[in-house]
Image (cartoon, rainbow, N blue to C red; front, side, top):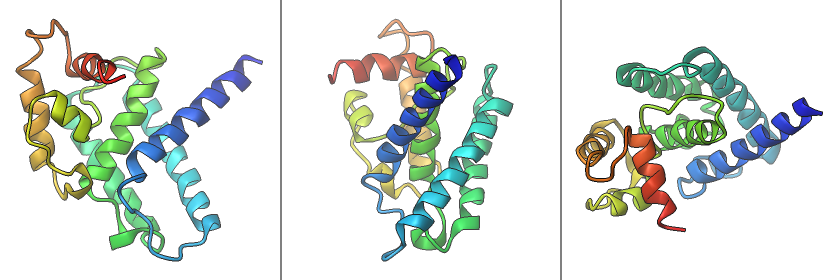
Length: 173
């Protein structure tokens, strides 16, 4: 019974992660059949679950996390026939991975991730000019936002930026 509960929750956080990352990003090519989208999402979920199990069960370095985002971009190219521009851009990829990690962390399954999902809400909460995350082609704006958040840890009495984002996000509810 415990496995069924864990599988159910994992699937639900996957759906929330997909909705959060894909919802505003228009990731699929026009007229892509649902069956191909579903196949792609299932393969992607397996890939991300493997990535989490092999990289995120213990604290991970900032540079390794960036490499994982780029690895995920590279992986998406294998499914170019369904993806607009034949791949994910950096913004969609960071949002998907970081959101999926955030949910796993909040459930106590992994330690705090090194970053957080960058979107317009957190940019506003951090007091930054909003740059559309769905348009990030590389890590430039993303790293600017991550770097800025690190300067606010003491102000908000947080030990890491994942905790900071959770605290700021919670105030939005």
